[in-house]
Length: 296
Image 1 (cartoon, rainbow, N blue to C red):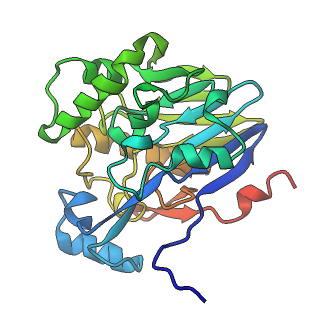
Image 2: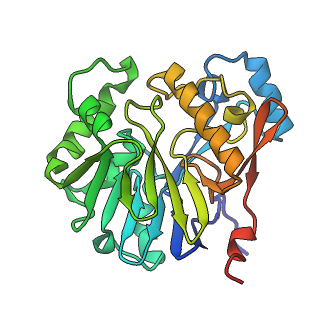
């Protein structure tokens, strides 16, 4: 018998939504020891510790997942926020391209790359060794997001490297970009939603096929327990925290009211679940097997 200190974990999850096939890929994870203030800058540490312990989490440690989504329609293969790629800052992330092959897809089959916003974990893999990773794909991005990061508008002090990467990776691909506004249709059944605040033009998405609905909330929720315990708590990586809170309230309420499954980029893998309202707060209900049974 051999012993190993490596964690073996699921990396790919697929399910059907009407006629669409949805795939989540674990691009990787970071382990951190700063649940406070990382997940909630404006909350007392004692309250964050209480929420963590209520969820049996080892405060102040946390695992921050990176989970891109792929949707296959009748005539499109849409890759959302395809992770770090070779620019991953640690070996625990940047797995997307290798895992994509295991899904049955490959980078050349992707018809659209949808960028929810311009932070590194969402754009770095648009190029590999200075060449487009998805050479046949149209890139879909919020016009406000593109103009913000490619321009000279003031940015948070900690975002200098983000703007540098955006200019290096995304701006050279501008001729392949389709710039959209919130509420725009990306392909049939897929609509962009305004989620601004985490970034200037941050987008979430509504997906519908044959009456089945799904919301992709991108980075609207930073942590499945902390972010939903109090929607006023601000994520340290939000570029405009006050605006992000307003978007979070609106989209979380929409998700809870719709009863539809949601995907969150930073939710624990496989990152699919439901948001339930509980008194004055909300709770994350991970999907178990229900999405596997929809067509039975």
